Picture 1 (spheres, helix red, strand yellow):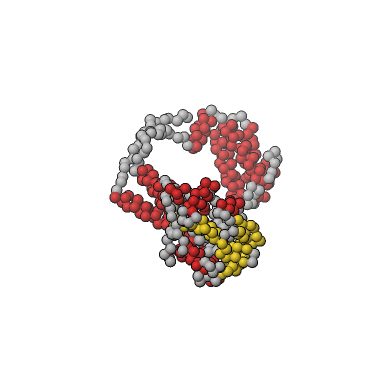
Picture 2 (spheres, one colour):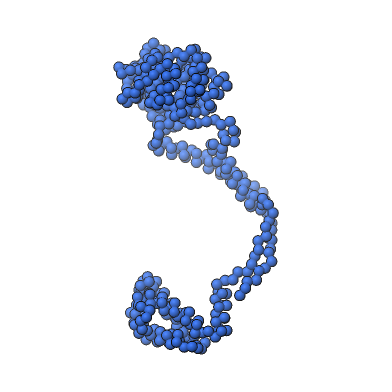
Length: 414
C-alpha cells in the first residue's frame, strides 16, 4: 500500500487590498496610542496606592518619599526649576550657572566630579545637599567642602529653631526634622542642644547648604501644617540662590541620553513604535509580500487509519488466516474484560460469565455460550468466514455492554 506522490504545486494567492484596509490600519493605530496613554495613567494611579519598597527622593516620584510635590510648588510660585540628568562634566562644558540641589543621592560624585563641582561653586554658583550623611561617600564630599559629620541616635520630628541672622528665616519660626547625624563646621542654620542639623558655608563666590535630613520636604509632609515651615524655609533659600535651580536626578539613576532613538524608546513613544512595527508586520503578511521568493510545498496523498485497517483485513482474507485474525481480536478483548471484572485471565468461562452477570444484571447463559465458542475457535486450525463474522458481532456486543457499565461506574474500571 504505497502512497502515490503528486507533483508539487505552487499556489499564488491574489493580493486584495482596498481602502477599507487603510481605515483598519488607522483605527488600529489610534487604538494603540490610546492603549499606551490609558495604560500609563493607570500604572501611575495604581503606583500611588501601592506602598514603597525603598525611599526614592526624586522629583519624578509621586509617592510619599518623593519630591514631586515640592517641584510643582516651586513651579507654581515661578521659581525657575529644571532637572539635571547629564554627567557632571557637562556643567563645565555647557557653562551652566545656577544652583544644584542633591537630595539623598544614590550615586555620589567621583573624586574628579567633586573637584569640578567645587570649582563650579567657587565661580559663584550654589549647592544644596540634603542627605542622612550615613555613607562614607557623602561624608567625603562634605569633607572636601570643609565640613564633617558624626552619627547620632536617630530622632524623629525634632523641633529645630532657625537662626535669625539668615534672611531665609522669614516666616519660619522653626523646622520639624528627622535626623541621625550632626554636622560639624560651617555656620549653623538650624540646630538644637545636641548639635547642628543644617549648616551653611561660603565657597569662593558661591555658597553651600548642607542638611542632615533628606525627607524635610517630602511628599508625605506636604499636606501636614506642622511641616509648613520646612517648605517655607527651602523655598526662601532657593529664591535667594543663583537661578535656575537644577534638581539632580542623575544621582537617582536618571540619564538624558544623547541618542535620540534611545530617548524616544524609553517612554510611551517607544511602546507606540513597537506596536506600529507589529502592525506593519501584519500588513505585510496580509498583502502577501514576502521577504524572498515563494517556495513550492510538495503535496502528497496521506493514508488514513481506516485505509490501513481495510488493507490489513484484505490481506488476512486473501491469506485465509481467519484463525490468526480472531486470535488478534479475542486475546486483547478477554484481557481487558478480565481486568474490568477483577477476574484472573486463566479462570474458566463459567466463572468469567458469572462475574459478568453479577456486574451487568444480565443472564449469564448468553455470555458463557459466547466465551465457550470463542475459546473453541481459538483451538481450531481453520475457521470459516460465517463463524468469524458471528464471533466478531458477539464480541462487539459484549464490548459495548462493558463500556456502558464502566461509564456508569458499575465495574472496576470506573
